[in-house]
Amino acid sequence: MGMEYEPVPVPGQKKVGGGRTALKLLMAVLLAGFALRLLADHCASYRLPPPAAPEEALAFAVTAAPEQDADGVDDTPATPNGAAKCDLFHGEWVPDSSGPAYTNATCRFIEVPQNCMSNGRPDDGYLHWKWKPYGCDVLPPFDGKTFLESMRGKHWALVGDSILRNHAQSLVCLLAKVEDPTDAYHDETWQSRRWYFPSHNFTLSLVWAPYLVKSEIFEDENGVSSAEPRLHFDALDANWISKWSSFDYVIISTGQWFFKVAVYMEKGAAVGCHYCKDKSLKEITIEQSFRRSLREAFRFITTSPHKPVVFYRTWSPSHFENGEWFSGGTCDRKVPFKPWQTGDRQLDNLMWRIERAEFAKAAADDGASNAGRLKLLDTFEMSLQRPDAHAGPYRTFHPFAKENMGKIQNDCLHWCLPGPIEAWNDIIMQMLPKE
Image (cartoon, rainbow, N blue to C red; front, side, top):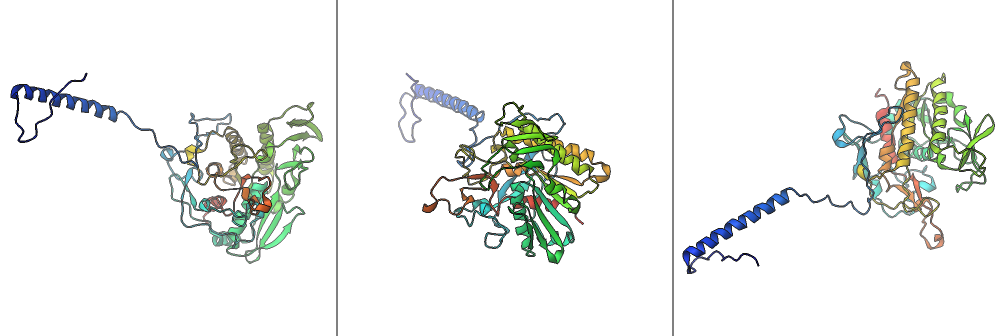
């Protein structure tokens, strides 16, 4: 049983047994004070865990020690407390009430698979975020008028895969706010295109070269292959190197195609494959083929007598959850990740480290006389934080309409337009010479 004690007498109440009562009262007060002190000390040493992340962002990153690969590139992302100066590529997305720079109604260059607005996406929260690098203010928006004025008589090219096509649409939409371009060229598949801005004598080209190296691809517009692609490690894609001497500025990138089954060629003969049917060929890993192709491309860029300004854009991750594109994967989050919520992403980080290391080697090989000509457009972290802005099911027109209620195919790789790709152009604007 617990210790008994008498309550403190209320005013006017008659005291009984004064000495004994007073002693009991004193002991009770002392014991109560001691208990309260113990409780306070315990509370001071205990902290509740932080509240759980909202349902839209339940992935958490694994904290690891700083890594360096064999080429000495530090792969540890910057943090708010560790950023000593403005770094365009490390930061987080913050709410922005200004809205998009253009819409599906004001830009005619958005292709159907990225036209989420016209395709019936009901929410627009993904349009109201702005990239804020650590150590500096929110980036000013892309200034199309200043860009075109400074690029009179110039030729820009975007060389790579369908993510570059996604990027090209964004850039054309921003520039078309200043001057509506003419459609100067397209190939039979519309994968390579060229636009011309006559008032500024400015040309913008999109060049289809998904592997950068020479490739033979047997795939229809829905991504269905009739045979394994063949990559030639010892030759580059003629689509871009044949036009190289006409380019003044180039944005170049590659990536997701290297995950596909493929056969690798040298001197006209198969030297290996990735998950191919011919089991007599040795397995060549994704990272090996990716590194080899990048080296071939960078070797050409650094040794060519023509020296345009080259932006290498880094890895653009997908955000499939609960499966992949072929097995029911989805991407239906409604808000960006915070930097610590992006998850482990081991394969994405591996590919990112490879391309940064190969870029660093190329920049060193380019020589001091060309310092600053090769620029790393490192959009990886800012893209990784945007699981909310992919086309998802809205890659097609009103996918949930009754007449379309078959199997829903989600696109968790390409981006809605308008969308976060506009921030890539904001950064390019900051990387150009101020003159």
